Length: 131
View (cartoon, rainbow, N blue to C red):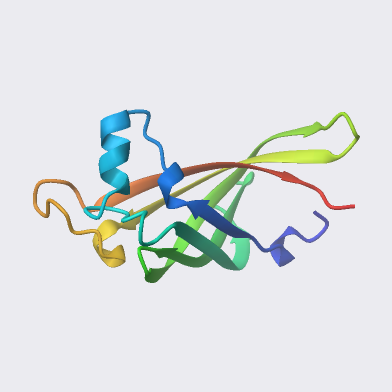
């Protein structure tokens, strides 16, 4: 925390866990038409740098996102949304990150011309500070 710009993040998300809140849509998103979760079980992000964000309370995390076997550079706009302590006294930080990607860059070309190319991504996460 004393030098947040030296931080890094690595995240692996199970492709089958992607949820929009609509069961039929979620099943379709997990199919070969979109994420092909059976073949590409994980979505992976590895940061390359952490810098100042658009606002005073934001960070810009640049890194590589790999989805469906395709890797591209993306930028996440990250905000710390809350802090708390666990019953054991560990500090917990809650984050929200947003990004926009072009789905064609990741080989997701189903319904070309019928569905937009730009996807907005919202990630909510929590981190426990290591002692």
